[in-house]
Image 1 (cartoon, rainbow, N blue to C red):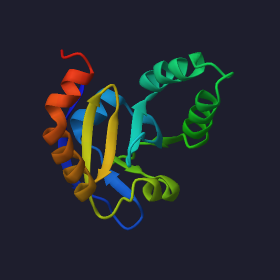
Image 2 (cartoon, helix red, strand yellow):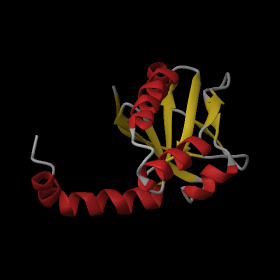
Image 3 (cartoon, rainbow, N blue to C red):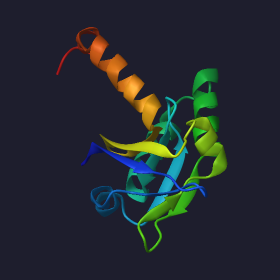
Image 4 (cartoon, rainbow, N blue to C red):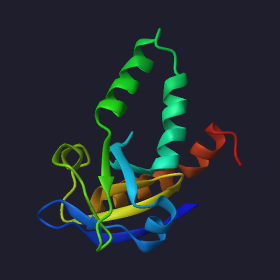
Length: 141
């Protein structure tokens, strides 16, 4: 299970070190795509296959479903972990997530998300302030 938050720095080429706990869980072959929020989502190949199956099950008769499929699949890119544990985030994904030098890598169960550190902190605080209403909206645990 991918959990926790790790703060790192991205180099000028767009490379960042994935935490070893995440690398152990994800493996060396990864798929990155735009995150639903302002982040980059990274899956290991088995997790990506599972996610792809869910995407494929969406009805192509609905415009919103078609657009989600298009965006997530067109933005997906296979990335490798190098010998130093780094991954290269392509420029278009860095732009989507407004990634700067300081980043946060967060585990969200079946994948990890790469956030600009300031954006993640602001989003995290917003979620905390809305947590009781969010929990009510999702039916609790």
